Picture (tube, rainbow, N blue to C red):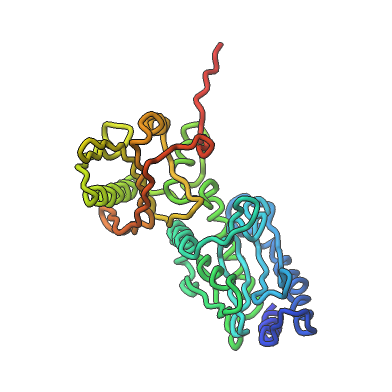
Amino acid sequence: MRELLHDVLLLQLEYSPQNTPAMQKRGRLVRDEVAAWVRAQLPAIEREAPGEIADWKVQAKDATGNKSVIPWVRVYSAARSPRPTEGWYVVYLFGAQGDRVYLSLMQGTSRWVNGEFKARPQAELRVRAQRARDVLSAHLRLRPDLVEEIALKASRTTLGPAYEAGTVAAFEYSLDALPSDGVLGADLIFLASVLSRLYEIAPVALDEPDEIADALIAVEKSAGKARRGQGFSLTAEQRTAVERRAVAVATQHLVEQGYAVTDVGATQSYDLDARRGEEHLYVEVKGTTGPWTSDSEIIVTKNEVDLHLREYPNTMLLIVSSIELDRAATPPSAAKGELKVVHPWRIVPPNLTPLAYRYLVGE
């Protein structure tokens, strides 16, 4: 494997989008020989990795149309990451300048939206990568030689920066100091075992923000579905810190707009009562640690939906995203946040997705 990595890196110096002899050789090495070596490690991965994953697979790619600037070979669970755009996996990424190769634990960098793949924003990828680092911290600390940032130096493609933003942790191998096959095999088994723990810890919440993950896991638990992992959920104290920060940002915005504001979240099915002259608004506030995108979602209760349908158009939704949560503080603290205003807030029933049902069994 050491020699294979060496040869692929040297061929990176002859990169061309065309299928030149050098690129043909690179393709054979990546798709056939490197992939074959990785595939030969699967029995050891299945034996050593925790959890019950019986569908480990290997996939290699060096071209999508034109030859790829960054060829790769990944190890993954077929059920949990059916495509490289989905889920989490371990992957060899060859630097564009041929000076280094990374073995990276990373995430799919695209999502399927309205019939096509769209790139995830880099800010979102970084947040999701940090979330994974948080829940895997005890395992990642076992290998201080892991790095959290990689540099593929791929200015000719948008995929390079996406791969960099999406990386959780990686082993970095430079061309002039490639390790032995024994070390390469041990590193691959270790990182696959960390991936296995990620699959186990967060089976529900791999692709969800903290707040959505909390709701999904709570619903499953209330329905009697015991889960082995906790997902990327917030503690009660962390959740309170995020909620308080969101309400503070929302309140400041409303006061600056001339409203008299009362916090009624503890007793009503909305959060802030805002009045300005004869105007009376029922304001819903949602806070999230993640970035806000066009397809982001929030959790609303049935009572909240009923109230805002009834009171429209005197309704407002204030979303405070990208809240910075200090999980290490005691108690946890939250700061900053970006505000999105929806006013009036019309709840569109087709946009509601049920998370659970109450069912009367009868006799």
